[in-house]
Image 1 (cartoon, helix red, strand yellow):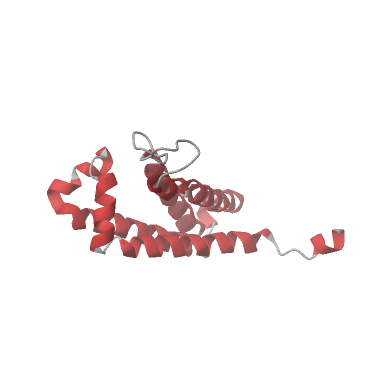
Image 2 (cartoon, one colour; image 1 turned 135 degrees about the horizontal axis):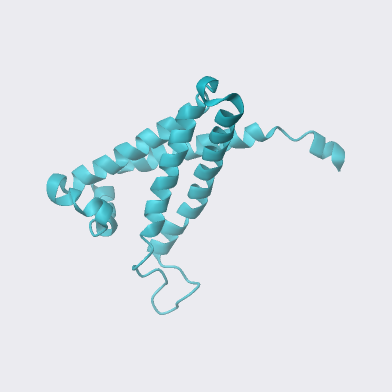
Length: 159
């Protein structure tokens, strides 16, 4: 058994897999925000949320979705750059954590359980939002990885 464990790849392989899978998620979801169907879907949830509600009268449904999508694309890019720059990775990880904390906060005050069944039968909104707990944890891992690397190398010469 120990011989098999000796052949496991380094933890950096897992960090890399997590980094590139999060880039994939942020890229696809960020690009989708520029489509009308996604802007409509986001508006149903975000239009009444204080963090975003003020944007809808100013720049409309599509404009607000474009801003959110742009933030997601920048977050993904910083997470990807974290492969070469711990500072960029730290910022991207923190932005990702903020993203998923916001989306998870949408769970307060909305119907989460399937009508007619109740807990544990999730409705489609709960299914959409609860996956963000895992994505939040992934961003936390990348944030901690970058933060520890910066601390160990001294912030000035970390990258």
